[in-house]
Structure formats: structure tokens, C-alpha cells
Image 1: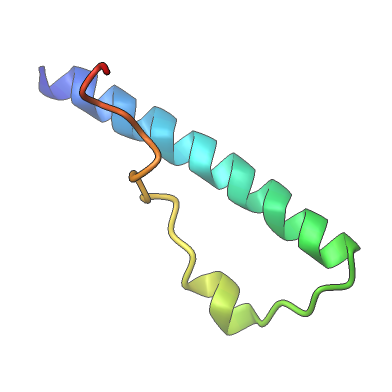
Image 2: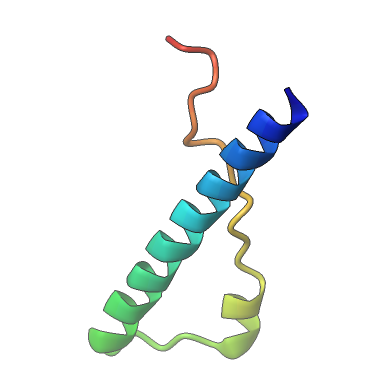
Amino acid sequence: MLSALGLVLNCVTLRNSFYIDRALNHLRAGGYPLLDDDVARLSPFVRKHINVTGT
């Protein structure tokens, strides 16, 4: 069970990292000022958008 949960966590982290990177690149391309300190505080471990109850 733990290995399955680890796999899910790795997949969620990879997905979040990918979309955070895309969002930051989109903002930079639009000229939005991004501070390095703010970007450093972003975390790919956010999970509120993941539905784990199956509903």
C-alpha cells in the first residue's frame, strides 16, 4: 500500500511541477514581474485539487 501511495505522490508532484513551470513561463512571457523570493515559495506538494475520495 505504501508503494502505491508513494507512486501517487510522485505523479502528483510531477504534474504540479510541470504546470507550475508552464504557468510561470506564461506569466514571464506576458511581462508579469515575478520575484525570485515568491517563486522560491511555490510548492509542488499542493493537493487540494486532487480528488482522492472517488466521487
